[in-house]
Length: 454
Image 1 (cartoon, rainbow, N blue to C red):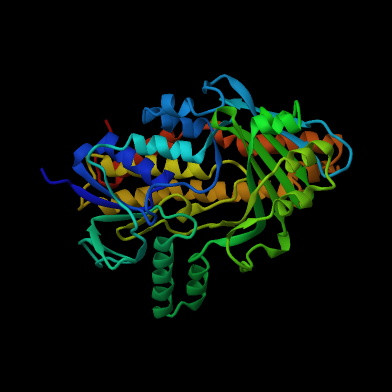
Image 2 (image 1 turned 180 degrees about the vertical axis):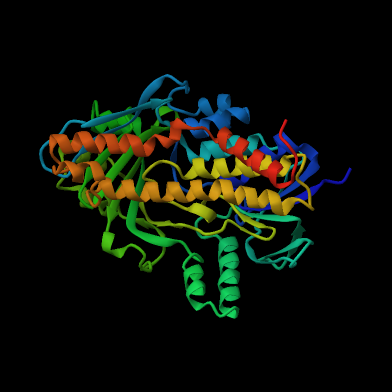
């Protein structure tokens, strides 16, 4: 039997491969999936990521909790645990953690490469992967018909649906929003065209992230008893902060030092977005900090510098038969540990919609409208949440409760209120579940197509 849909996924990262697994689980052979990856194989850039209860619920639904849980520092369970410890560190004197954020599961921290390998290992036998396929253009008919994909090697492919899971520098988003802007210009709406052009590329946040991996055994020889070997931590300071947490079954520390220039947010980058740098570039911005933070940074042996970019308030995730997923739709700062989780949630809701028995070529537009209606507000919300709390970590945003109390953020009362703000901001990770979003999407689809739910 011919498949009811042919789906092309551009991007073989966490979001794209999760979508392939969701489609296999709920649609089986009724949807043909081809993944086009620009690199020569599946690979993830970056080091660590954190998983929270919302995302873990999807991991469990896909049957991956055993294999992924074995890659975590400790096997996850819902018992409330430490998510992160927080301390103020931009002073010479040693400080204590001013807050310990407790949440269901705590933070499940894993290496990105480990997670990607688990996704790859669980791909269905009939899965079709195509490597060295960098998307450079696509065309789609005004009404029904196939989307044509064009790749840098001169080849083409066709599908009923193109899903751009191609990351922060998404070619799919670039083409989509260039088309949107040109359409607005042809209609004489120059202000709208200028607004749409701002979404073609991700914008720089004004923050650089210096990344490194520390071998725990070697680090503890250098710094015996250092809490970063076992405790996920935030070290906060003016215009910069440090995040560290163990990954790879506790064998490595994922370490990131953030250095921000708030006045540069939205400006063009000067140079490449990712570069290898001398370790001193990572260590020196924190040389005047408290001993514990300095010692942690002095364990660095090599470093890379990443310009942190984001995609704010995207007005549409869908154009005809082309859809954005993951970082292509809502690239965000790392300050709330949500980037990978949001890509997985996109994949879950979109995959369930496409797999639904009401979804076929003739109803595809309805399914995509529902995806956009359900997922876009959530994705845009998390982008803004992550941006705001990142400013608060670096004392460039004063939460309303602290302002109303008329206290300094660095005072004992200020730290108490900052702790409340941190918890409230992070709590979306465990206060509601993506299954609720899917049920809402299912109801919307049936209402749109005039079929009652069971």
